[in-house]
Structures are given as structure tokens and as C-alpha cells.
Image 1 (cartoon, helix red, strand yellow):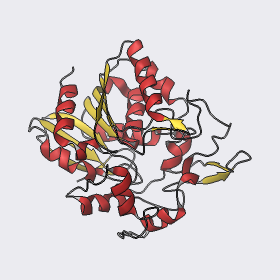
Image 2 (tube, one colour):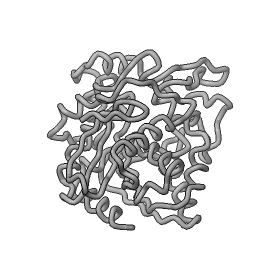
Image 3 (tube, one colour):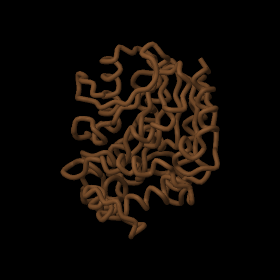
Image 4 (cartoon, one colour):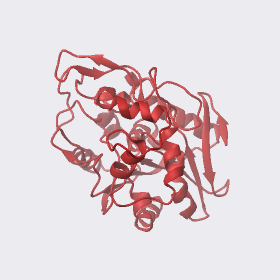
Length: 318
């Protein structure tokens, strides 16, 4: 269904009764709400699941992402959606980019969150352009943002390409090799590929603007686009804002032990950065726990029973 909010027309998938316990499901990058359909079908009947398409993805009204605000456009969109649905408090589950948005929801409106489940989340300090402690490598966060993306992949994404001929540029092959731990292929692959191909590309949209930089490797994130919004540039200040939030809802972090997208890499120790932020959350009185499953980047599809058990435990943590 479509919901007209104070900010934009948002396309939303829902399951469960109108008076059920509300759970907001926030999808990841280069995907859409369709990625949540399997989990929504497994949820107990007492839960109202709400899975919107974020701006820039799916069937939500096409609006640009202001990367100078980091994840704030998505946060404000989601809060406006909750207002339109007359939902004051919800549980939030965020996958990948949606996990970074969830950090932003905590920072902006923790009093509206019953619990937070971070699924293969990106680090709150952003993807790329940062030291291990989250501080910028260069003043312009060179080497991060939209310039990291393969132009061939973006062209094929925009063209709706469903082929399998090139693992470096084929959306389907990238989903098989990077979203999941091979050889796992979901039964819903065609629908998930539809979700990937619904990404709005070009002219400030995915992946975003690229600026020249005097620092190696010669490019920096620009002011528009989702990849720039979750770069170190877009996420500056997010960790501190998250840690300052009160009240502090319980946090569950579920990650894939074989995730090749969010991992401790030579260029950035992302898993360690997330754990450090959550340890600081705990030191300030917040509760949190970490669960590593034997999956790739999408634990709720690759290990649905184990994921659902952990999720329901966190939903009951209040």
C-alpha cells in the first residue's frame, strides 16, 4: 500500500493485525522491502510488520537523498511514516544500510523505539574514508562514497539487467556472491532481484555524486546519493549522537560470520568498529548482545529459524 506522509508518498508492505505489536523493518542498500517478505511470513500473528521502501528504492516516491545530512532524510521519512500510521512506539529491525538508519533513529527518537535489532549493519562511523577509531583519513573523506562503485554495475542496475555473465557487474551475480554465502541461492531470487533493480539510479540518485579530491585515490563523496550518505562523510557525528541517546532501548546485533560486505577488512575494521560502539553503549547503561550466524550478509534469509528465535527474544526484552 501507499502512505502519504508529511514528507513523501511511501510504499509499505504490511502483515499482521492493525492492533498488533508494531515492528518496523528497514531494508538495506540496493534492495527494497521485498527482502523482508519471507521473515514477515514467519512472524507470529500478534505482530504488525511494517516494511517501507526507503526513498531512492522500490515504489516509494522518487526523492533525492541529501548526503550532507547522512541518514537523516531516511530517519525523518520513517518518523513521518509512523506519524501517518498513528504509531508512537515500535520495534525497529534494520538490515545493512537499514542498520545505519537504525543508529540514526536511536539518535533522533530513542523514546519511540521499544527495541533495536541490527542485522549485518554498517558501522555508525560510515563505510570508508575513516581510521579504525572512526576519525577521517582526510578532510574530504577521500576514497569513500559513490566513487567506489563500478560504473558497469551501476549501468546494468539502471538497465534492469538480469544476466549472469560478469561477477563484477552483474546484479544477479553480485547478489549471489556478496549478499549470501555461496552456494546459497534463495527460492525467491527473482523477486529479490526485482528489489535490487528497483534502485533509482543516475542524476544524484544511486550511487550519488563524485567529487575530485587532492588526496589519494583522487575522489571524494559528493552531497547527494545513498552511498555518500552512509560514507564516513555522511555519518560524521552519528556515533556520538547514538551514544548520547536516552532512553536506551535494548540492542541485538546479528551478523553473518562469512559476511564479505561488512567485515574486518585491511582498509577498515568494520566489525570491530560496530562492536566498539556497542560496548560504549553498554558502558553507558544500555543493554546489547551480539550473535554471529554461519551466513553471509543476509542472516534472516540464510538462517531464518535461528534469526527469528533471536529476533523474538529481543522483541520481548522490554
